[in-house]
Length: 567
Image 1 (cartoon, helix red, strand yellow):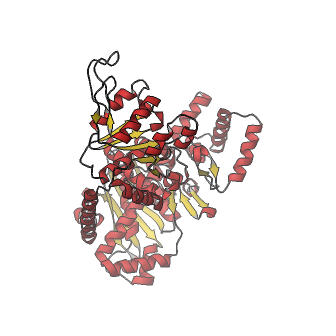
Image 2 (image 1 turned 60 degrees about the horizontal axis):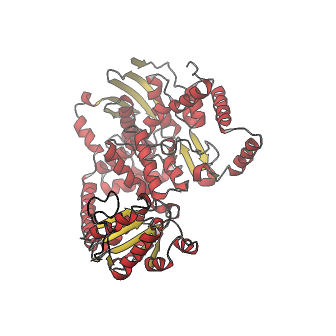
Image 3 (image 1 turned 90 degrees about the horizontal axis):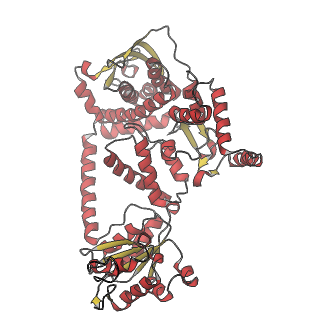
């Protein structure tokens, strides 16, 4: 549908955009939707721009600031579509200039806007008044030989390209930063610009940066090879807690000593076990991992130590067990506490004598295997309760290592999140814009009872629920859990627990609800009805009040009310 802007038309109400700004002063944070924002003096940015020009030169600095604006535009295009799903294409597009003004970057006055998204036609002519980049030129750089509104231009290009679904290029045809009487930009499809290839080159990484990246890549490759030579594969983590674990394991890895890995479920015990193996002199030999809890008790001995033909019904042929397959290498016994008493006795003999007999056999077989055991329970307590042999415990507990849970190594969360994000981008053949600032904030304040395994599953779900070229939101990561309050600084924590600013107020009304005997379904229904009332019975408006997407609210309303209001 073609839409042409006429000068007498007014901007749509900006309330839907301005309502997304939240100041959470007690946390030192400002939010625009799911983007974390900053308030900083223009003079600081002016000094930064001057230093970039001095360091890189005009052309390279221009490319840097164009790319800076480009990233901001992508985020705002996503926000505009979410906030104005039922608006005209023109009103959705105008959210970009309105967000520019809301952020204090300039005053935007459209002269002509001609849009036809379906046919891919776009033309815009806009005056930019009171540009912050012109002010920077006036205070720090002086008049320039070329248009100076670089960041604003990068923003306009990316915002409009994302909006149209095709490449749109804006250019300044006049700029006060170079002495013209006004700043005016024209935007149209890339094909309509004769020099589009030359302009698009600004959005590629600077050659100097590319050279630095190449050098960094070479250094990283060399370090990786050195680490590979040493067998140092400790997964992802740079926090002090995790580095201490790696240093501790280094001391034991070279020998044959048994290692007992302790820690909650999902902390990465098998990753550490493989690290011990790769760090040892046995790195070229087999590594066999066994989950003792996954094998039926009556089969555990045969699986671990082998079985001779005819030893029991169903044993139609002789076969080696996991220990024989791991000969010369390492065996990892996860959930070792689940071993039966007979299996514990046989394991003790393997550790003490280095030999075993298959189930139903009489031949003693010499075995050279390093044992790494793991459990998320307290073995000492199991010994006291008679569930685990004391002599086996002392054999396994020669070198115990306590692996910290994820909540005690939060510095590693961004690294782990990016690691899994890259993994699932490749697995699902899609490319999101990464995590929104608010999503990362929620991750930092969640307790992660399932540790790294839970983090991996949460990120996989987030990638699945998020479309390509969109940011992964809080709701995509934590559907169904309590989300942060829109204005109060309430944060997501352990399984929906409320913390930080607003916690006392939340606790008060939670107590009132529980004392009144009101069920969860009724609370949800009351919240949705009130949001619909305040949103004038518009589902999209009510969804914004509740911090949800329109489809998510529509689904819940359909369950509660049996239908949706007309919009």
